[in-house]
Image 1: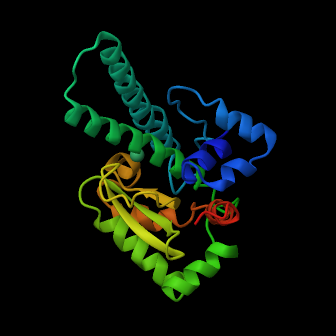
Image 2: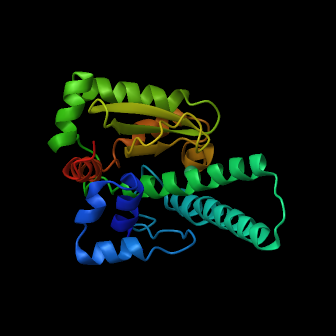
Image 3: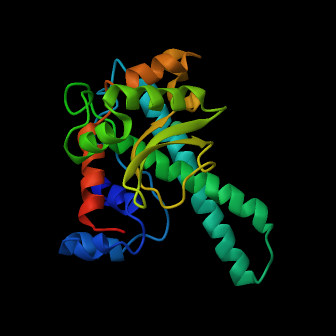
Length: 239
Ligand code: MN
């Protein structure tokens, strides 16, 4: 599945009117979705985010860590299917907790790769367009947003993420701090920009210095991609 279709399907809530307005090809793909998850291809080469994210760090993260969530989620879906066929019982509490972890991991990594770009070639700079305006209005300026997002990323307990989301009830961009892959998530708030602060995301490059990694992230953050996510969402007229 092309990454833009994947991201569109991840960003937009199910049933949003935007889904109806997808062009023919996109609509067909949206209807013919595969039954299991798969690792998306990156829109850049493994070397291209250096020096902010090294080739070794990125390749390991994508090929091993992200793949593990895809494999984990698919294994649980198969386990559920088999139990249904056999009429057997599963420990639903444990199974669904694990499923939430793996699906969350897959979805967040897919969004993360799509909001990174090589420095100077889409990466870095400041948000423009509707997103830039929304950030200025909510935070009083980009610098204040960057400070709050950085604090969310640096202070995430253990393994987690910082994300910029958009509340469609109040039309506010809101920062979200996710623990693991699925704890403290605001239900149905689409993610515009996300940063992985699990140690596996930065340890080879920055050792234990997470703050250095977060600082480096701003050089490869793709604000155009984040702005496109918000524009697409707003065009969908989702209430
Ligand atoms: Mn990760």
